[in-house]
Length: 523
Image (cartoon, rainbow, N blue to C red; front, side, top):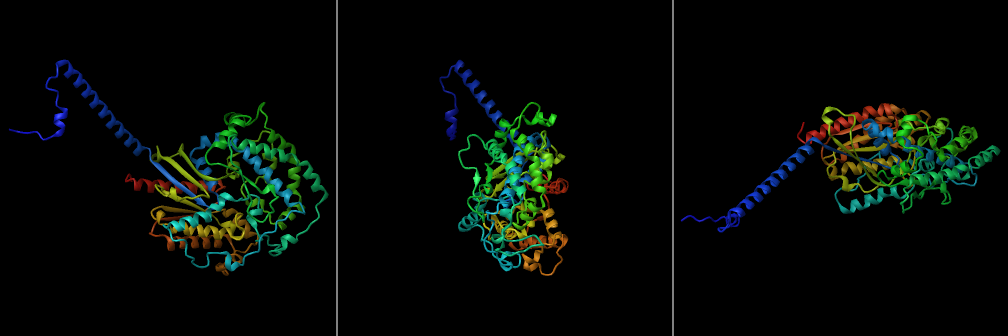
């Protein structure tokens, strides 16, 4: 006699006393259950196929404050989501207006003889740079190192990173005609020209404009402070030096869109306001003659030079375009949006599908994570590549957060930490030696790299020689500190330059997509 040992058989076997009607109901339920199961299997298969078709490419942007991370992100958006980028241009007008106001207020502060820009004591060239010899980075993979490194980098969130030039200069002088020494700024005296006070009076409405713009940019339900305290050499009373910042995401855009006098579509079509009023733009138009006179005054330029206020080198600089950007019907251009300065704090992830793409990228979703000075370790998983931005033009500048730290030295230390981190051992690194346009102008003006980087020795002080030297140093750090051999790509960039950056980003895009397809075994 055969015995069925399957325990499910007894459960699934129809009842012995089942009637014909009950059997029909049971069979109908079983058929429906099989149909639902088959549909679930089909949905899972379709979802799996959709995931294969819609690939996700994830990039991480790293670099110190004002290194160009946000501008790089905007370049990606401009190149590959041009429709959305164009429709948002009008939303950046308030940011540009705020950049102008703060630049003018920075100048007015510098023209006050009672204001102080005295920085801390100058560091010697021997202690400024980490390029001359190897210095062991934190050993990656330990909790102690993660804690120390986070504390080191978290300062970018908690302190002011000035676009004005005060915070980006410190005790180091880039003016070849004047190097008065580390303590001379506190001894620098001048007599204000009578016309400066008249201009100051004409520009008083800008204080109201600034408050108006901040109210427009900050979401109405923002409870936390939105100003970063200055951590450098200016006195605490310098309210002009507190930078405005916004939270991650597009909340500020949504807020500005609601408060904007007209939406982006109508502005994009008509390039005019129509009957809508923009009080801030009207005030800037009225103040434009005074602002242009202030910026064009040779005496003002001399004071700024002696006080080492280099507005031209920072983001958000529009003083050379005042006539255009203060026009009543002003609509920001693509270049204006790229140059605009709006500090974000925290981690921002921007997701988009490329409107402009090649066949292999059809259906690819891009996720670019801008880690604005916060802990970036949690974002190591599933990263296809890291774009690291090192603003090499800052070799003669100090951090706003810590005016004893040279900006180039800071980038080198951060680069060492990235290269040596074992969690990143399998991630390709792309290095942008950024702000090369500023570097070229600075070297042409006679600023000597060897004053700040002793290992540069007696090499030519030309852009070609300096950029090649720095590129070699960063490449050597990559070879020395990488846990495993991996691909490395380096570019000299000026991410505000749309023409040259377009080709570089296209190369980076192709490299990242090719590597992503290879890892997905689709290439």
